[in-house]
Structures are given as structure tokens and as C-alpha cells.
Length: 228
Image: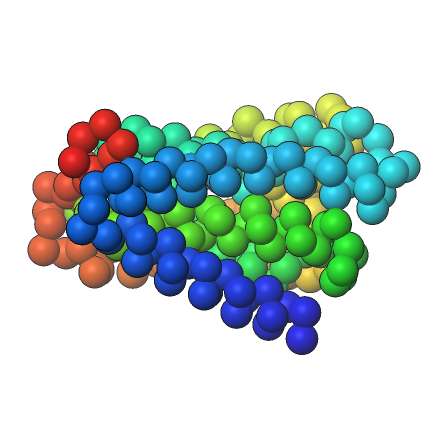
């Protein structure tokens, strides 16, 4: 019930934010865009507080903002404020292929009403809302092959964070093992094979996410706080 309740709240919040982002008043659109980006960026703070509150014995190595979702929180904020088609493509595809999966199969060590519960669904929720806000409110459209930028970015992240995990003994991005609480990655075999096999469903999902924009072969940058 706690899982479904969180999803229901996020759905309602997302619908409200998209509605505000489509307002005929420019000031309302700009304020909504600004504060949604701010929420994405500041969602890193409750993530840290939750770790300190619910797992005070956690060593500093696990407190770094190096999870893929943490990287996406920063990227989402920038994508809302900066009218870059490539950056927005990376956010749209990566968030809806990875972070959304986290909402569907959450890796949460502490359930409601823990700090971890609220921080997890807040941080993951605002990024998913931001990814959908880009095409629905800011009128951004990807070009036909822009999803390849997202796939490249995701693999560069895995390649960069894996040596960090080996050095620190951490598991950012789940490059060392799948989540202990279970996820769809468990269906893709043991390490390191799931890192390779997940490229196929990721590529398929990203391509499917392109289909709503097939009439925009050159893409659209979309509006921003500075250009409407």
C-alpha cells in the first residue's frame, strides 16, 4: 500500500505540474519550470539526510551522489533551465528507462514512514515528472536518433563509476551486483552479463520512446526560462 500510495501522489503532482507548465501565462510557466528544476537539484539533500537518519553507521563512501539517479537529478535541473536538445534527450530517455524502473521496483531499505521512503520517492518522482515535463510542457522534441546520445551517456557513466566502486567497495549504478531488494536486472543473469544484456532492452525501450516524435526528424530544442 505504501508503494501504491506514493505512486498515486506522484501521479497527481505530475499532472498538476504539467498543467501549470502549459499555462497561457508566461510567468506561471517560468515559475513552474524554475521550481521543478530546483526541486530536482535539491532532492539530493533529503537523499543524504535519509541515509544519515536511517543508516547512521553507513560509511562515507556510500554517501556520495554517484548513483545514476543522483546524476539524473542534476541533469534534470539543467535540462529544464538550459534549452539543449541533446541534454534533454539524455534526460528523457535515461530517466524513463532507468529511474522509472526504480519507481516500479523500488530498492528501498526502509518502508513508510521512514526518511528513506520519502526521500526515495521524492527524488525519483521529481526526475520522472521532469522527463515528461520536457515534451509535454516545454515542447521539446528529440530528433530521430537522439536516443543514441542517451545510450552513450549511460554507458559512459557505467564505465566511469565501476572503477570507483571497485576502489571504494561500493555499488553505485549497480555495476558490481544487482539491488539486494530485487529488480528487473535479476532477470538478465549474473555479473557481468546483466550489464551487457541490459543494453538490448534499453535500446528497445529508447527506440519505443522515440515513436511519439516520429514526425519530428530534426527535433525541437523547446522553450526554457530564457527563451519562449
